[in-house]
Image (cartoon, rainbow, N blue to C red; front, side, top):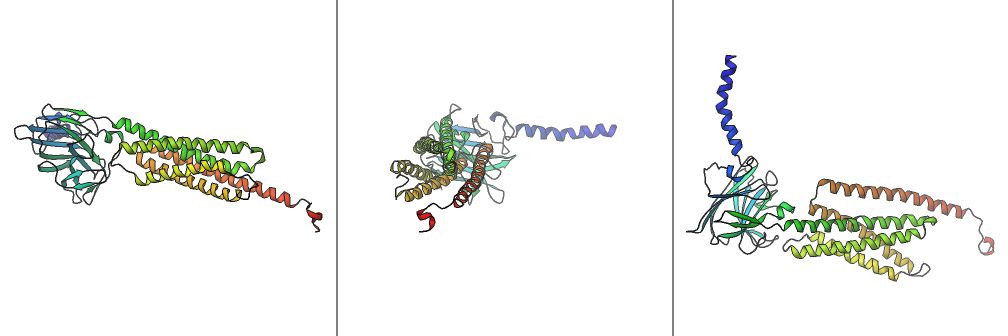
Length: 389
């Protein structure tokens, strides 16, 4: 018993500092006021930034316009990056003068200065203001970025962000979820207050509407309309119901698709510098091809017309092209929106189900057609001169 008591009491001095260290660790702290730094740096003000689990500590000396900052945030992935920036001209990322901290391949931390003139033009360069004493460290899954800046204004537009990785010193694209889009605002250097510009919520709502409209139109209604036209018309009892159902699916899909295409154009105009080239080009192609397909209905020759055969080739080729491009672009859109995993899984299940239905109907249709041809060939020939001509 004596030895047990002695062991417990002797371990207490060891566990107590560890417990205190965990309590003040930036990775676990709930507010910036409980955070400390290994270099014992002190800052006069701090703020719990509203998104991305980020914190900012700073001291501003108006006498010489010097701003000392410590930005703390967890990268989106283990070997990712964090960034804090001042935008002298606007409230978003484009135009910002950025400090980026990341972990190099040897495990050490490094800081880069980036000038972001657009989302495509991110170059390492000197900033529009003086920067010195840059440093970075990491522990507990959290990165810390330190720097001193020459800032003349007492209120600045700040932007912060986290990303997944750095390749050859260049940061990979961050997510475009609501927290990422809302990671911006104004910072009062002397008043100690931050104000966020929460425009990301409405933009994300528009992106979701754009995605839903296009998934329903190009990704569901058009495939269903093609299945109806290809397989139901083989059954005489389905005529002319299959034709009207086919027209309903395609016209409805086109109308909804045009609405989705228009929201995409609107989003593009509101997001200067953000261009998803392949997704955009496929979307424009789909709109153009579907418009041709709709107007081709007004030029459809009668069944007995000599050009009907060529019109059918054109109509079917265009339809299957729209089918393939539509499904491809829905998946590209899902990759951009990056929704919860079950949404993409649900769409994959729907496409697999439609494919299975198409295969089943394909087999049934061939059986019906072959039986029909077989029954015709066994009938007595009643052509010219009863076949004796």
